[in-house]
Image (cartoon, rainbow, N blue to C red):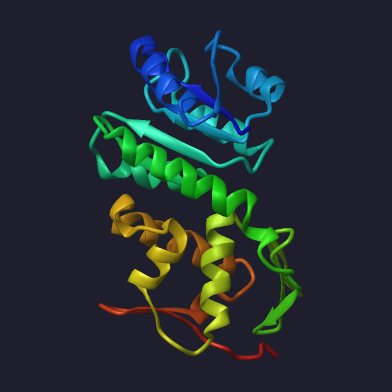
Length: 230
């Protein structure tokens, strides 16, 4: 049974989400003290976190940053605010998805199921080996990319996208293919979410001098160019 921690101060909404998720046999927890969210997270050790942006004292961005300093657990943001920068900020802090309030519970459940499936079942479907690309070593088991400049750590989403791109190196991988591979059903994700994830991947690869080898093909998709770095 997966444990889900809901960081939401609206008790009515929390209880409604808890009731719906419990029907799907998820073990749902809430936060008792919003001054000590990280402490409760460490005690509960959830498999997934759902977090609102607007919270007492510290906002969801703060707690996302704190959780990410301790764990790679998948995080879904909830927000009643409709500013595009909220989603961008959430993804840049390491969130895996973003749900706008009000939302349909079937959509939230589908996102949760897809995220749990690819986070915890991804490595079970096939044996994953260390690969090389443009002179860098890619370890999907540790979600790392390493070359002579150092090592960067990717999120599950970033590594999933990266693997899809290098599997078809020098070929265009369409945005539709990436979205469907990541989220199983493109109706449950915005196109902007993919853009944020790819940009975040490219920014991390920039630290290794490799960002330019992930090319955007406007109106088509992305290409991972294969070129040995000397």
